[in-house]
Length: 134
Image (cartoon, one colour):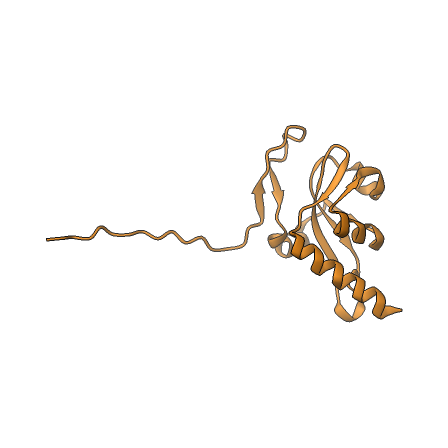
C-alpha cells in the first residue's frame, strides 16, 4: 500500500495594516503603516496625521521624497516614524474625498510609502481634478 501523506496548504487572507520596520533612530516604533490598511485605520488615528497642501502632495507623488524643511511645520514637529499625509478634497468635489497617503519621516526627509503605480494613479486623479475645476 502506498498511503499518501496529508498535504497542508497555508492560505493567508486579510488586509495588511502594519509592517515590521525596525529603525535605529526611532526604536519606539517597530512597525509602519501600510497603504492597504489605511482606509480602516485612518478614521481612528489622531496623532500621526498631518494636513498637507495640494502642491506639497503633488511634489511628494512626483519625487517620492522631500527634504523635511519643505513639508508643513506640523510634520516637522512630529517624531520620526510612520505617519499619514492628507490633502482635504484632494481629488476635487466631483471625484469626492480626501487624498491620504502613508509617509515615513526620517531624520531629514519625508518619504512616500506608496507603490509607484498607486502614486501615479493618485497624481493623475489630483491633476485631473485640478484641471476640471479651472
